[in-house]
Image (tube, rainbow, N blue to C red; front, side, top):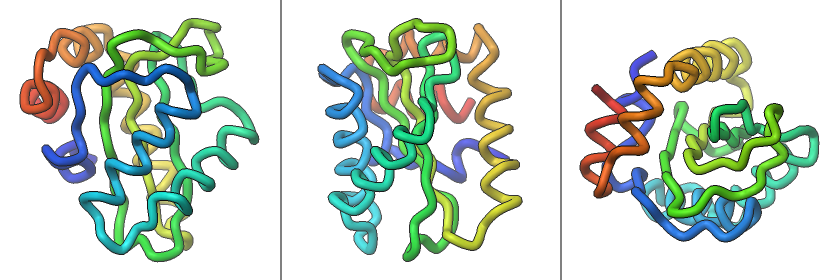
Length: 148
């Protein structure tokens, strides 16, 4: 799985105001819906919140991978944001989150979902990769850091 297949420059936002877990998820939903017209922001936000109720998607090291299944999704879609200030995400290591990588998959994509999620976790667990993302100063810098 290549990260550039999941995100686009329009779905990559650097150093945005998050404020809270809920607000960060809303920002991700809006960012994706603005770029992928057949996805409804409110429906996506509800799905991301529902997934978080099952258990936090905060994987540690200041990273969260909010994800859900979407009925009208043609393939796996991602968005990446970094926050100016970390937010509490109930992560497994109790650390606040400042990097969020959202992932949407079609309803029927069971194996693909797990493989893509595993690849993302592997990439984001590398300190060097996280440092590159955190060092980005603009949306374009963040996009280039994410795909390199």
